[in-house]
Amino acid sequence: MNQPTGLSRRRLLAVVGAAAGTAASAALPSAASAAPSPAPGPGSAATRWTALHSQNQWPVIDPASAGAFRVEGSNATTTLLTSAGKPSDAATTLLHVARRFHYDVAPLAAGDIHGYTTDRAIAAGFESNRLSGTAIVLRPQAYPVGSTGNLFPYEVATIRRILDDCEGVVSWHGDDPVRPAEGHFSIGVPPGDAGLARVATKIRAWQATPGMGAGSTP
Image 1 (cartoon, rainbow, N blue to C red):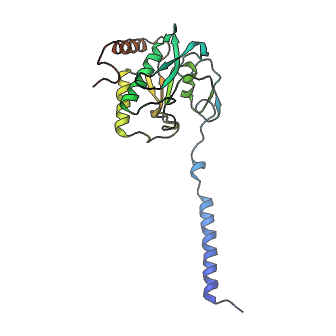
Image 2: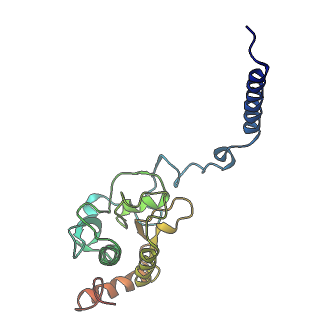
Image 3: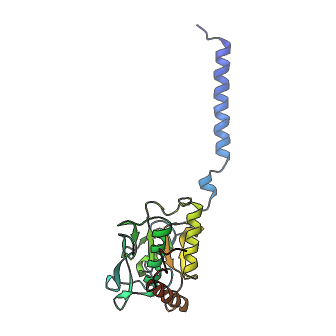
């Protein structure tokens, strides 16, 4: 028995329409093919950092040159570069960043801050700064690398005030244009920088003065 003419016409139109849609899709470049792939090397995925210095020019250290320090006011601890068994200027500055973050942005619990590591596998060049004990990662589960928008605007504003405390010697990688990391902070100047020594001295003075430094009333 022959099918009604109208039904055959609808099927024919459906087939023709599907074929046209497939051809149109093939003619347009996909978003993945249109965007250039990142060049291999530091900053790309699946990279092993082999240099003797981290991205911020500090020497890669062994565990004997690092020490564990508690973020005052919290249960969080992290391992950073030491100097004569005490927090180095880099460690003093980064611990201040962590303390202010704890008080003014989001509380830090045990396990919420990562510092020095011996793992050379990185996904972005700035991650190598942990190899020199001059970088910290705060709440990595809350602020995954490569994503933005995990912080409220007032929290971003607070982070920028924390950076103001540090007078330009700390880099916040939430501003990284290629692979943002809103929980990553690094020393942004090379060893021996006079500005870093000045900031660390200022922070130590705050710590010794009641009502000053992280946790004090603005």
